[in-house]
Length: 140
Image 1 (cartoon, rainbow, N blue to C red):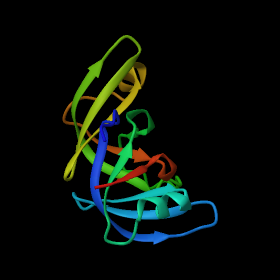
Image 2 (tube, rainbow, N blue to C red):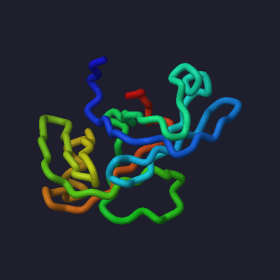
Image 3 (tube, helix red, strand yellow):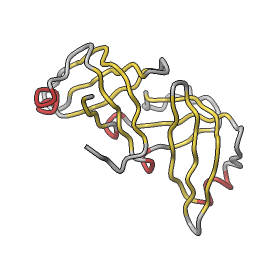
Image 4 (cartoon, rainbow, N blue to C red):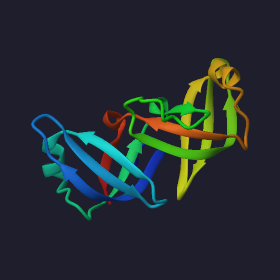
């Protein structure tokens, strides 16, 4: 299946915490980072997910926020991928920021003004932040 989602991060499910309305899936990415996906319990069953399953974690670029310093400030976001900016492409109103993370890369789409306000440049360290509800999973 071909997808238009740029951010496709391979990994292995380490645990599944089933719930009434949402299942919390812990994924160890190939780069060693941990990522949590909150998906429908029916999707766990339909995809045949279990600990040890190989998956791709999918995140659209518009659902990745960037922090320019470590974010241990009590925010509820558990998905934090540290990396380094490798490139920035700007358009009229939007910008695309490419980030190298251990074992791969992610792209964040943000306003051009945000890149200026954060003073982002290639080589800068950043932390990619992703809500668990914005992570989808596909089987490999």
